[in-house]
Image (cartoon, rainbow, N blue to C red; front, side, top):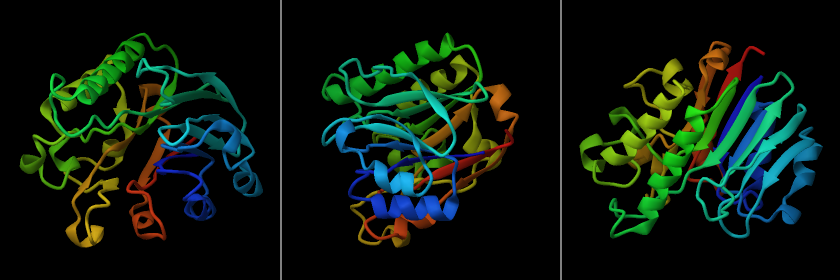
Length: 260
């Protein structure tokens, strides 16, 4: 089974490249973040034509939004309000084999890494802290994936020293993510298959005139698994080429293959 995750930055605007990715990569399940569409306007038809007939969505107009698109049966399991303000940032399903799949879109956190000056940064830290409490009480085989908006390792960014004060790579965010990972002994599947300091960027800013030439990437998108599920993982790939497609997202898809 192939499970993919992609912050698409508007699923309707980028439906053509989503369809292309599904045709070329053929994942069994695609977790989308930042879909930016209310549930009744979600573009179901293009997915159904490609065989993805099992869909669980949690949308919101213009902002946020998550969805799990599948060609294998899934059953909605949960929707957590880790932002504590009803933003559509999480949806979870259960697979036929009993594995839970949790799709999350962690807040970006604004520009200033100080919760007193920038409330958005505090909201981000609180979001991760709520996830950590959930994680500590989690029981059963689980995959946690999505846009975490944190690049934890020095090799997860184009310039560790340059970005220590930049939101997404600050020590306080990295510490928060480390606590989340430790709360259930999660396996970071990206780094399991591509140990640091291997290149594994998943995001490049739109601000760069030529993203590939400047290559100032960060690894913001992750797929983690509990130890029992991680034992079934066989491969992990970042589809960096998607960043050069027509009307791209600033993120690219990640895909993990499992032997179940």
